[in-house]
Image (cartoon, rainbow, N blue to C red; front, top):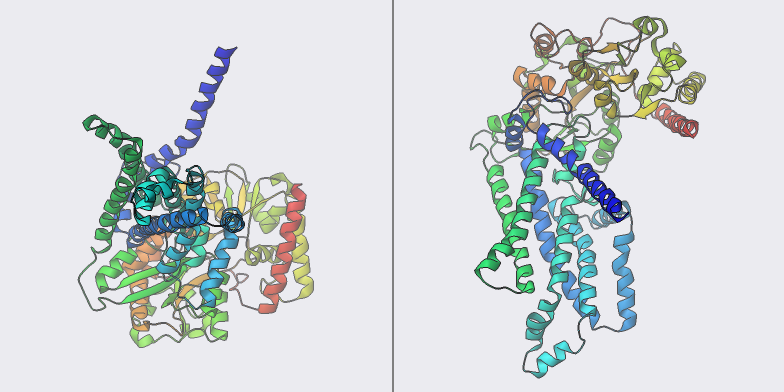
Length: 631
């Protein structure tokens, strides 16, 4: 019986090890993948490590992560230790109150703490960036240090310090030479926890940062649309750093013990300087990479602030622009047009924004954009006619197209009959043959476009009856078809053929079709949303001249090719579009890459605030209906 229990315990331990370490091993292996895929290994390559080292954004995030973690750990360890020692000599009622105060940040949900810090910095008009992130990390690390140190202090003889002073020690000597050595294990434990929490934090960091400052967790979050394989490389680097540190921490004292006898306290003391030294070396390496930029050129020393969608920029375009101009590009990322709008409306300054068509119209109407100086632009003649002079910005007075495309249906050719698509169009999302095997896109605008087009209405309608019919259509869909409502997860999920069909952006469909030849893309004849994202310059831009240079660079052949071939969305540059779609191109023959321009039912989205609010409220009710249907 005992033997079987031991065997079961060993098997369980092995399974736990596999559970924890297999994903890490998978990540390490795919960091050497030659292709972009995260699921298919196409050959050994150091391509993504080179991309990581070349990426100013990645190296800066690595530097930010470790530099803030080290500084926050150092300061919070000192502050937390002093506070714990001071409280040990305070009255019981004060100790009890401070214990509860100290426990509050530990028990409080991180999102509440994050919003509290954000409001604090906004109230006192402190510009968010590196310093605010550092202050927040110090603040939330201190309670962990105190929590580790307090038990050690409580276990001490309360007369220890008095005995030391009776023997001639000064109060400072009693503290440093008697009290601190006794509580060193607690101090080290607290500092290691603080370091870990700082490196790992995302939520608080996300709400207190600004000016393009981001740590690794924020950078990974902004890449959630389509995870860049170079994230595997930088994650592997972090694993290697931590592994080396752990080896030194564990093997170092054993090696040193062979040279001389050391007490447990001295061995533990050795851990902190070793860890600090390792991280300092990493910081030096990263800092060296950050300062390896070009010595050129006409805009040397200037900074361009860009606010763009996550994973919406070519592999080399930022580095190439910096090399060509000598400027530094600081790029922040947003998840939605509405998130971008909030920052712009609150006065945060950027030189370039990349909003969608309807949001550009809103920004123009609310006077947040400045007109472009077309005498500084040499790119307009290179752009496709179909993506210029659109209703949201006639004459392209405020915007230059960045990407464009349509919204359609991605489908598995092995599961979906093309005749069903041609016959039903968007109504295939009501065909019970595909019940439980469809994706709906979690976008009120695109979902209502689908419903309205399925019913034969304009997607820009403000007719209350038509909107209500569209709402009922969507409710019927979620109640009878059991769809999975997703956002960008649909990209990898459909590339792996996990469901039969789903609503998707054409650029994402192009990527899916390039990854899986069994996937197709269909645009119903009833029409679709002909969308475009474009570059604009806010009125409060600090460097509009450099912004015009960036627009030209991105719109020129090399920049546009890098952008489109890497991201997968259709380039507005006519020559690039033809080359990528034509013979030998990355998207040769992939219909999703080339937007449809010959269907009179296709529309450009027009912004209407009242209609937007109505659709938003209705979409919330649709998702509630979907949740109730799942129960």
